[in-house]
Length: 388
Ligand code: COA
Image (cartoon, rainbow, N blue to C red; front, side):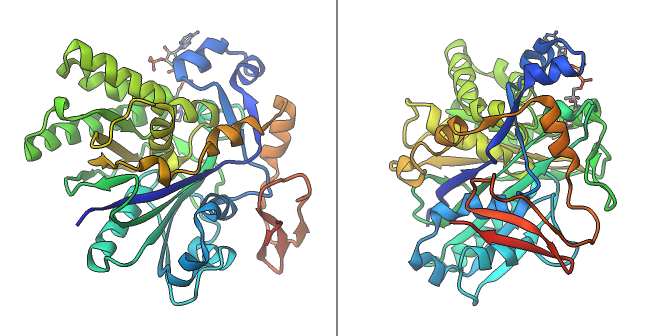
């Protein structure tokens, strides 16, 4: 039975900053950010959005009345969880109007858990072929003002429906995965910003990719010739390019050109949005699917997922004939064209407005055009609203 990604949808808030403005404000050469890191713009997450609202906003276009009545598994992957006990998926179930006889669960393993969610969903459908599973990967990437990680912030969510006979991509049963307990990036419970050993993290990412790629080739007998595109988790776009460059010499000249062109297409959206943590690999996939007109059904795509701490997985998927039908038409370009640019001073002010502490407060929701927003805190309960 073919099982995989049937539909995909994306959300990121309506605000952004230019990386050239940030470079200027931080006394850096803009080319360091634009070329050296490979980021052009960065999403700014207002206090009225969090991992739950972004996840709901991403999933909303996929919801139909039939799905609301039949969906019985919601998997929410995040490392920006809003509660130590209650799963963000329980809020999603209510906000999206999903029937109550459903399992809802939150997963955590840095940027990796979206991939585990997807694999879990595939296994569930293998046992229940008539069901669909909603997998939502949603995060706010925060390193802190004036830190070296600031240029690699961002945020947003990708929602995916997993089913039998999927429209977009079948998930092949060829995953290679590994874990190593390392401290390259983490976020203690008392902090809203990640701690990161950036250079070390970049090295671990590359080591994991190479080790899993070699293991994949050994286990499956496949070589780079079997792949039409390689898609990477992109904490910043240069990171994925470094990964690709590690295996490019295995391809002939023509294929090297093709893989580089596919990579360019896959990093287009991340370059405008920044890191999505759990959703980042799947934003690369969306970008590849939307921005590469020549992708042929039947193409084998290799996907590399990495989550600090650290866990990695490399697997492949086969592109399906009607893959465009599973995507929301023109969704990301429309969203990007409607965003509003901020000055660095405005961004810094928004960045400091975290919902810390237990005091009641109301947030300014009227300036947030998103369907689902966080309206404030009342009796230590987050107030989520559907605006329209
Ligand atoms: N023009 C072009 N490129 C330039 C440049 C310029 N004027 N100035 C610097 N660069 C290049 C550097 O050569 C380097 O390229 P390389 O990595 O190919 O060698 C790149 O820009 C970054 O410069 P660097 O000095 O290494 O930046 P940094 O010390 O500020 O740190 C990160 C960059 C990515 C390590 C940092 O932003 C970070 O820690 N981000 C968090 C990312 C992370 O770890 N995420 C979790 C892992 S998945």
